[in-house]
Length: 251
Ligand code: ADP
Ligand code: MG
Image 1: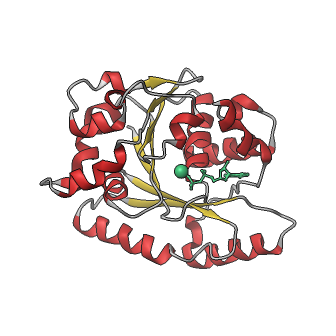
Image 2: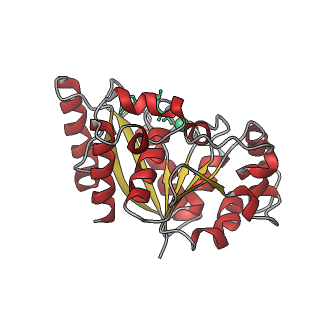
Image 3: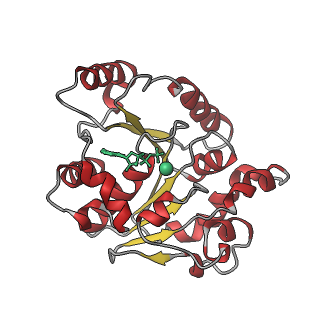
């Protein structure tokens, strides 16, 4: 059975894309078959894995609106078990294009229906908003995974995200569940990180993953080499943290 997991948080820069790439790559290293769908017009997950589509016809945009030729949008990555459906600038327009459509919340779900079953895990890397692309991701997903950056105001906006999650669950996708909260850019020397961790555990209790992702320069360098951290520097603290998170996810 495949598991489709949406990585969402309407805040930018909290580690959605870094988590999508590195959690997916860690599972691929463990020989799970994994797909990343880049749902953000900024296409950071695509470029971070050196998947540069020749045109929008090779991207998630095509998949949403003309899903006839599904195979051409699925690209290889540097890891055998990890495939990528990249994004492109044109995806910006899709929020507007979708507004007009009937069943606009279900376009991604429909498009992925036949594809997902070929993978153990599918990760949907959401844009930093709660617009239709994120709602499409939540409708296509079995689970929501929230990256929470260990910074001031980490929990600000979380209420809004949870409200969206509950609304989608109630009205659009009853089988959606909260898979968990992962603390990112954690710094053990910094009291703030511990404080955010306690607040998150108060708020989400056992939904907070035991594995935390440290602030680690290798994680921020890897995308400029077009590689997941496990390929760029396997032994780094960042890589090891994501491998640990992957083990926890598998359970
Ligand atoms: P989002 O997708 O939520 O906008 P990103 O994953 O793109 O966030 O992360 C934002 C920035 O922070 C990127 O430059 C990324 O390389 C960096 N970053 C993310 N996680 C870490 C980490 N654990 N340690 C160091 N840098 C990180
Ligand atoms: Mg991102």
